[in-house]
Structure formats: structure tokens, C-alpha cells
Length: 325
Image 1 (cartoon, rainbow, N blue to C red):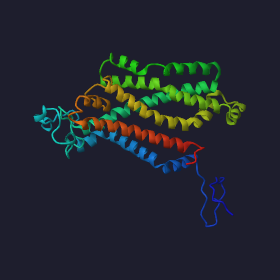
Image 2: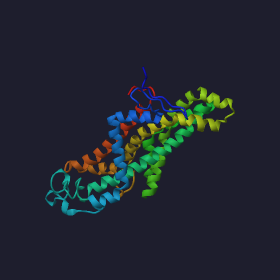
Image 3: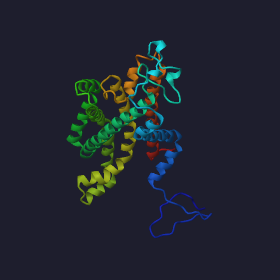
Image 4: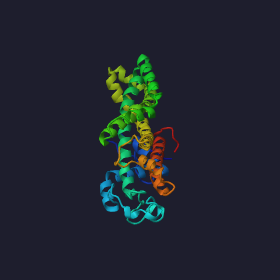
């Protein structure tokens, strides 16, 4: 009986066929992982929302021009003067066809424009911080795992020291005394978040490198005279791509929450730059008058973090060769 199991066809040979005349096609590891990922509906939903959010952040000026209002434009006519000039006119925070997510209390600024421009801030800081953390984590983790010995002990103790550092207190103390300019604050936040979160991925990479350096293909590379640099870049890193990619998607939501926490505490990006965390902080004083003002940015953070976590979990299952999914 002819099996329909996928096999690779050597170059120059005709692709085998099965009884009904259909050709057997070989599948790469990437294609197999993609097929597994497509079967995970939650992961695909999370990935779709991430793509949507990135497009919204990139196209924020265009979207806001069509559907919103200038981000710092006041609309006092949308504030109810009969209630102390605090809550918006109407129900649900002033949501209407002109203000899709309502307006801010007191000022009447468009909350829709604040949310989409806040997505720019959160994603920019989170992605840049993640990139920095991944680069440092790969360099330190691969070096410690491949060389072992005193090098591994030194880097491992250094990672333990970084993980034990009171990051949130350090960030508050440092950022609060720095000039409140947008570009400078963003750069400092990226350096702080990325510079202190790399040990998490560094430990993952180190553990994988310790295992891989004893594998046969590494020994074979050494036997033909390959140097350490070539072994790391040609043998180890390609086999570390999957865990690095998965863990990167899982630390992005943590960085989004950290940026929101700093903005909530008043040491994030300076106003008038929109930020989800600062919107939540401002809403604390007005939640009794306008609960929607707190609910909307809170939902934006919640759904974004959930989407990244769902996609990261699905990607991990898809790239795991032992997965049964």
C-alpha cells in the first residue's frame, strides 16, 4: 500500500506519485510550523490584532484625519456645564459619530485620537526595548553557553545581579530627574527597559546553547577546523532562532505594561504626547463622572497584551517539534 507521508525528492528525480495520481510534496520545517499555527485560532486572532494595531500606529495621522480630530484640540462644547464642567455631554463618555470613543472630561479632547497615537508610543518603546534586550541577551547567552567554565559563571552571576535590581524604583528615580523632552525620555525608557530585561532571554539562550554545544553537528564542525565564531553563527544561532523568536513575542507585552506603568506614575513620555498609561492616570480623578474614560485605555492595554500572549503561546506550540498540535 502506498503511503501518503510527505518525503523530500532528490534533485533531478521525478516527484513520486500515489495511486490517485497526486504528487507527494515535501514540506519544510517552516511550512509545517505555519500549518500548525494556522490551526490555532486564538493565536491567529492574536496575530491578526497585532498586525491591525501596528497598521493603526503607522497610519495614525491618516486615520485620525479621516475619523478623528487633532490630538490636542479642545472641544469645550462637548463638556456639560450643568455638572461642573467635568463630564462629557451625553452618555457613554460622549461617544457619537463625530467622537468614536468619546471625549476627555474637562478638556473635551478626542479620546479616539489619544488612543491611536498612544498606540504609537507604546509599540515604539516596547519594540525598541525588546530589540535591545534580544541583542544583548543573545550575545551574553550564547557566549556563556558556548564557552562555559568561568565565562559561564561570570555571565550567569551578572544576570542574577541584573534580575535582582529594583528596576521600577531605579526607573522612577532616574527618569524623574532627566529633562522632560519627548525624544530623550523615549530613548531613556528604551535603554532602561531593554537594558534590564535582557537577562530573561539571556538565560533561555544560555540553556539552549549549553545543550547544543554538545551535539554531533557542533563536534563535526570542530573536527573540520571551524572556529568558535563560525560555529556560533553558522551552527548555534540558526538552531536558536525558534526560542528567540517565541520569547521575543512574550516579552513585548511585559514591556508594554512597564511603559504604561511608568506613564501612569508620571515618569513616562511627557505631555502632550499621548500615552495609554497617562490616560489611565488622568482617569483616576474622573472615573466617578466618566467611567468610560478609564475603561477605554484600560481595554486597549488589556487587549494588546492578551493578543501578544496568545500569539506567543501559539508560536511556541507551532515551533515545538514535540508538539502534538
